[in-house]
Image (tube, rainbow, N blue to C red; front, side, top):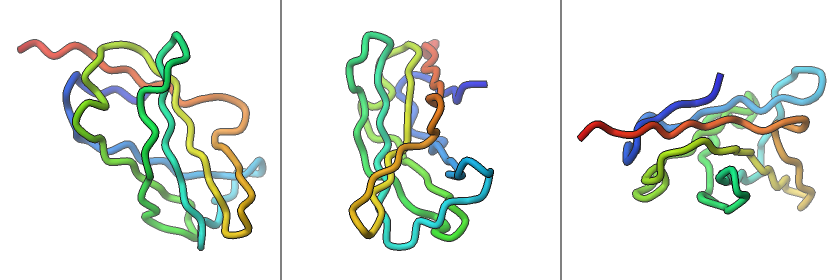
Length: 106
């Protein structure tokens, strides 16, 4: 089920628990995480820093910024981790996160 948000809303934040192939939470101690979201044509809509809420639990959030949700449509997203040793890993590994921005009524 995709994450849904209304057009021009900045809440709720999107939250994820990043897990390895065995289903264990990824340790994000010393890491940084970027949130990438693109439209169906492949155009990057959002490229922003995520907040690590729980490093050992792999929990991250992205707080929507003004303009992030201004265009109705379906999007694909991913979470890109840069570890302290500069290696990079993207989650989820085998797919993308679906995001739906629905039209506001007024």
